[in-house]
Length: 527
Image 1: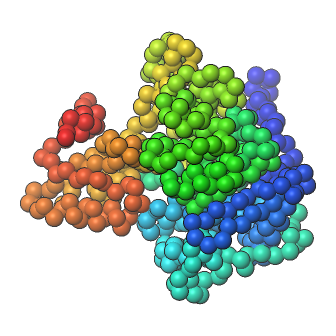
Image 2 (image 1 turned 135 degrees about the horizontal axis):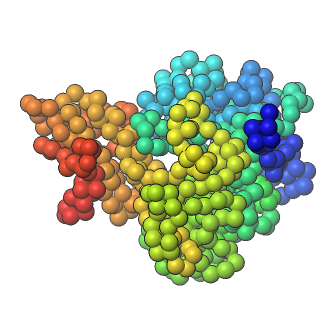
Image 3 (image 1 turned 180 degrees about the horizontal axis):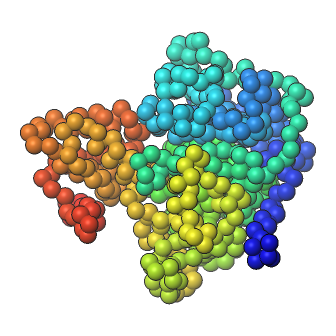
């Protein structure tokens, strides 16, 4: 074999001989007495876990999983709203070598059944309000554990007969030794794409450590920082940008059940919060609330740098862009230098960022092109779409660049500006929604001949789904009600169409494809 025929050796990762256990154990040793997790429920008592407390809880949970027969690489469904158990379960699975499948709690029974079946989950962890639904969606699970409260609120009688979350606990000394392998599977999130079903983004331990380290660096996080977590813990933002990043530097996280405009400032002031992530909905909601005379925030993180609202809130917002597939921010504003207002920052030094035209050539300053990301699979980029090699292959160009599907403008100032999102993707109140997911459900409703879903601008949610439907001949007006009923049964609430328009035809482009740009223009012109 010639030298040219040899396969190129894989580079070392920055995390050789380590995994997420390594980080947890190190923080227990170095920051043991420092607060890590502060729980601020809307109901019930709050609580604080030091790094030592939290590490012990994670290790006991991992031992409890092992006691139930969960083995390394087994998948465990984690279907929880924000609560301490969500953090313990997520990282406890990783500590045990299991793979946490963190799912959106707004999912329908049909969606949850797909997640459980597709991932091959062996067990599940949820809370009282979802217990019956999880059991119905995944009746073949070996076990189902339920938290004692609904994020602090008292549980009802419907939890009788379920194993309590607290029972997943055993002596950490019984944990079986295994290698600290950075390429071992860490977690799965199901993310919307342009296919009919969400794709299972699989991270390795190296991915999670990469996200923690890079997020902490991008955000200029320090051990004395206090990071408020109000976005959902089943998403990358809260998991990596907030919790993992804080863990990396030994900082503190304050966890709330969800975003609350009325509670945001009192909790922030009470704990001296210095960092939080925002989405546009949260910012708009806070504009209706009184501002405190003083607060401790150094930064907010959001999709754009330096929005006009910074002056109102007395904060500095760092803009960023990232995806579940990129683990952390592919573009980022500077924590130390001035940023271009409304930009998504500059390319992160940790990624190869390309803005290319449709012929694959770099765009000139001032032009808009397709955003592609270069990195190392399983480290700076996700490992694969689990169980879908075809989708994994289609996500990368022949040269290895990840195809984001987003379009951005390269500014003359060197900053990047978001232009439009991936084809057929909607952004509904911070949630990514594939139009094809909604179309898949509507197309199966009796009486529907064809359907096209697009987004309509919304003052609070960014945009909402609108369905244009061609009915079969003779179908009555009750079709719209049947469509909505089907969507309610099979889709999360934020995916439900806000308007169902029965039409005789749909605008067409080349090859008879639906011209969705014309439908969007029609909605923009509508009152």
